[in-house]
Amino acid sequence: MSKYARKSDYNRVKLDMPFTGITSFRKYPICKDLDNLDADFAIVGVPNDMTTAWRSGARMGPRSIREQSSLYAFGAGYDHEKGITYDNSGYKIVDCGDVSIINGDVEQSHENTEEFIRTIVDKGTIPVVLGGDHSITSPVAFALEKHEKVNVVQIDAHLDWLKDASGQRFTLSSPMRRMSEMGHINQMAQLGIRGVGSSQEEDFAEAREYGSTILSPRQVRKIGIEQALANMPDGEKYYVTLDIDGLDASIAPGAGSPSPGGFYYEEVSDILEAVAKKGDVIGFDLVEVNPLYDPSGVTSQIAARLIIDFINFIIHEKKLKAAGS
Image (tube, rainbow, N blue to C red; front, side, top):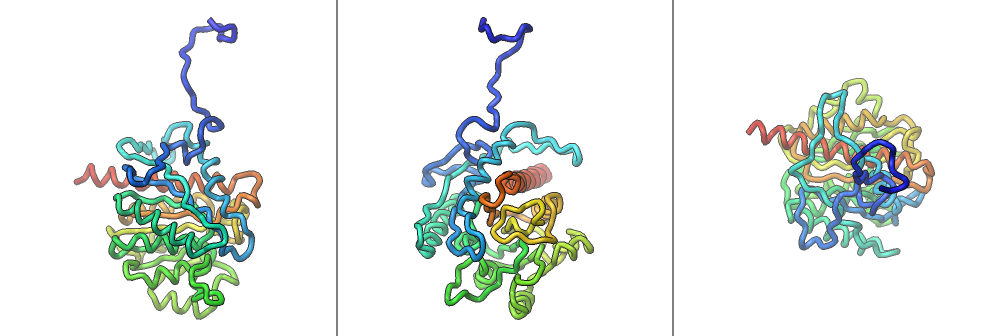
């Protein structure tokens, strides 16, 4: 017996603590070859922040989110408030690493992103994308074109409806306008939009003309999440794009453009749960985490928790539907 052994009898087990092991997202298995991808969900990092307009560093977001996600690799999935155990058995989740980013070449980096995500989608796998600045959502959206009538829920401080920036059409300020121009994109709800500097008045007018529902956190709180999503169709396909600055700057300071007056963690989690109940989620991204401005790591931790929450909600709804069919 080891001289370090406890005095009483015990069974030795491997605890796999959060600070040990290789840091894939939540310590999920790693898939290095997309040709052999066989999974229900694929985690993908897109460490591209070349169009950042204020505080650069979101390229480090995927790595930081993965690190903080290790905390949630350890422990049970029981939610005592809801009386639900989130059991992901029967579903395979893998981490496919990062898209190849070409330093200084936005166009090629976007092409690489679209190709990477398109391969995942063609495999019938749900992409879970870690940004990166919000420009990465455009190539991801292009890669979803095999799906028809994709409805989009955006959680963000900013409208992101810019026509172009000195001729550049695929920046962090334009993904929602670019998505509105895609034939496979259907209805939109843009939640969390607030404050001056989000977009010009004409951008808001054109977004509303497209049919988008645009609500601030204060407006969502007043009418409730169900009413905020009332114009979004039931039973159809959904994509969610979540900019971390959709959350209040007091709890998510590590953002490219943090903004006061935002959502809190529970509110965003509740919105994600409502989307999972409303339709078939075919993919989502979480962007703009900038760990360089949050040495505590709490922004990345909240991001990781929201991603885990959403995956749990999606699988839970799939299991409920399967049980009822």
